[in-house]
Length: 475
Image 1: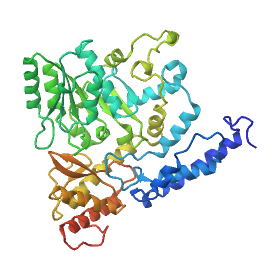
Image 2 (image 1 turned 120 degrees about the vertical axis):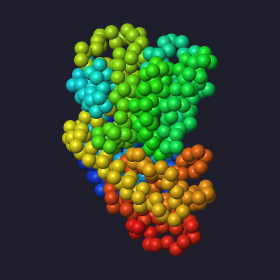
Image 3 (image 1 turned 45 degrees about the horizontal axis):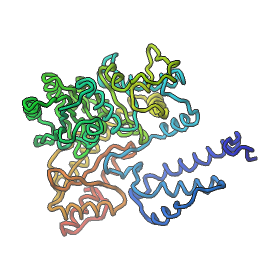
Image 4 (image 1 turned 180 degrees about the vertical axis):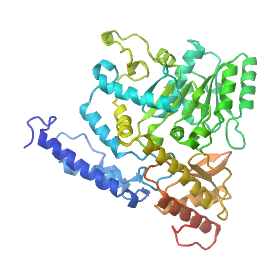
């Protein structure tokens, strides 16, 4: 029987809604391997149907659930095994359950007093991440909405620690391959765009430590104040990993803050190959990680680690909220509101803590090793295909390739994506168009990569005018 208070459904209504929603989700996830990698059929009609005045009365839940389910299969299928574009985000079922619990319990975790055990759960996830990167006990961190917010807080912490209140003449060093969020973060933090140096990379698109040092010396000679260098542990375009140890040597010698943007690649640190690629990362002053990438968690799960936790707090704690005077920090657990721009925030920690406790690190390590292997399978499968050019071997799980002129490369992308079994994206490197496949989803396995190899080779043969084999057959 419906509740007298519609915003407070009774136990039976809650169970019914949860069961119906769960059934839709289970069916959707089970069908992901068979869903098209992209779908835009009927999109105009579906979008138009949403343009309506705010309803005065309510609707049937079953009807609304059907509408939501229909919307979920339109656009890029970012959760499916064939989605290899941009940086995929698979979304673990255990994390979805954690979010359901967190939002239903709806406890505030901005200060430890409000939900001490939940806050400790979230803080423990930060400690686990810090341990994975060899950070000391005095390190700190925060779960954020994503890499952009993590990079912003890192730049703010570096600016405060290295420049104080006067940012005049501050200079930031990146490369042409550094994620655009680093530039945006610097600008939002008050650094003039002209003072963000995009240095040319080496032949492998990595930061050149010699060029970095020369740029720092030159800027200092002009009266500027170099204070921050951003290295990448896996660029978005090609997965290139900057020589972190050598960059750390320069940063240390020149007195700069070293931030490592490991949003995409960072969790490969859990694997032996990742640790070798990221040698020296423990020397970074701060590290950005995106659990919604390498830990396969839902979008909206980022993180920032800072080696000297005091500096993160000094950059974000303004001590001006008198109405919070009763909420003192615990001796071992921080108030997250002191470590971030956010005061109101959701309980992100449970969607990290629960999957880690439920599955264990070994499950994530095995999955990440599989992604590295699959990238190599894709690379080996297409590198000798007629007309395909692959200038760089994959360092992590991104394979970038092209085909002759830009028109041919664009035609190749169109043919690949028309298969609707895989979906790739394009980018520009050195003024040339490249296609890129990024293997990160926990749902992508050898069968789909073998299929991708066949689709790419067939599509390249068609663009080149050669007779194609049966679409989807492996080489």
